[in-house]
Amino acid sequence: MKEIINLPVHSIEEEEYHINMGPQHPSTHGVLRLVVTLQGETVKKVQPHCGYIHRGIEKMCEKDTYQQIIHLTDRMDYLSAHINNHAVCLLVEGALEVEVPERVKYIRTIIDELNRIASHQLWWCSFGMDLGGLTCFFYGLRDREHILDIFEESFGSRLLHSYYTPGGLMQDIHPNFQKRTKDFIKYFRKKIKDYDKLLSGNVIFENRSQGIGVMSKEDAINYGVSGPSGRASGWSCDIRKKYPYGVYDKAEFNEILRTDGDTYGRYMVRMDEMRESMKIIEQLIDNIPEGDYTAKMKPIIKLPAGEYYQRVESARGELGIYCISDGNKTPVRMKFRTPSFVNLGVLDKLSRDMKIADLVAIGASLDLVIPDIDR
Amino acid sequence: MNSIYTYFADIFHGLKSLLIGMSVTGRYFFSPGQIVTQQYPENRKTLKMFDRFKGDLIMPHDANNQHRCTGCGICETNCPNGSIEVISDRIELPDGKKKRIIDKHIYHLGMCTFCSLCVKTCPSDALAWDQTFEHAVFDRSKLTKILNKPGSSIIKDIE
Image (cartoon, rainbow over all chains, first blue to last red; front, side, top):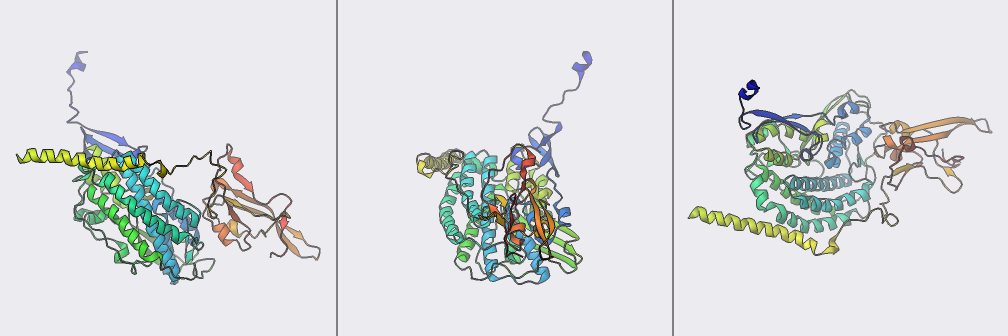
């Protein structure tokens, strides 16, 4: 009895301890497990443990033909499914040196931007909800529903479309597509003002995001943080501007850059990107040229032997696909450089010496999609 | 003096931003015309999906219980998940030629990823998407469906 009393008493403020955040935690947006080392309430270290939703997509690609690979890439970053499909299509078309019709390029660019808006809307919902504003979740999902209706009418599904094929599209766009898209832009221009009123200027939101998780430009480049998160630190890394694909070179839009690099900066970049995406769609939607919706392709696609790399700007950053072909109808190796996986690497750096509530805000501002991390 | 000023300025700025946010939610609260939710199980009869909605794979049959499937098996080879099995027979026609007809066209809904490759690559347009969406069943074996109806045959002019 005496011994127990004489044990040295450690203050919880001094001693470090670990807690598991996830894999079933709502603010990790999926099955991401973060082992957080804490001292009191201060985060000392964050160790992400991946693999809870690993499906082996890269390995599965090795037994699939190039048409079949498309539907697997939907399931990596399910919020920008069209953009992932676009990357595979561009890779195959580039390797075979196929020129796709101009109509296909226009439609693909418009749909990519719609997909980007839908993805940012869902990010806005969950960001607001992570910081305690449940209203955001309902308003964001309400507006996202309009885009999903456009998708459902034209492609038959709401989330995982597999609409692009190497050489073109599965089927032509629905006759209502243009009208619905224009209606949506008109509608969303009004609603995005509500977003600003509700969250951007809110004092609680500002206090919880400004100066939290500051990422310098050097950090962004060293860790390879691309996409809106990297651009918030002043790193100009927009693939749509640097290496234009589709008809991005024909549309006028600005690359959103900010220099603050904190959670608030990453938030504002995404809000402005939604406006830029609407600008791109408005320029292109009336100018879709007539023509075929697919180029003539052989039923069995065989890439010439060699190595290929293709990158696109997904809603989260740079998506790169590296492919080795030996001339057969299936690739020897497919490697996906997914943006979420690379952006996760900087989470530890950003959240050191922050409070555990800030970790949630920083994680939400990086816009991680867990199936994109694990593949 | 300056710190007292900023203290009160912060309070008023905070109150103002909260009121702006409340004005948005209050506007929706007092205008029930903008409600977007649907009463789902009640509106089942009027709920209509879009024409292109990918609900369930079907093989359309005409009034004479005839379909267009030749049993070539292209859908089976193109399916990435092995959710289609085509079991075909060879029969001898009266003029001595042999012809392939399908015995069973099996579709596993539980394995399907709705990539639509089977519908797109079918050379005789024998497959199509249905607009049903209530797929929940109590037993997994009910997700395996035979698409050609019993006693059906192929439309004559299809090769």
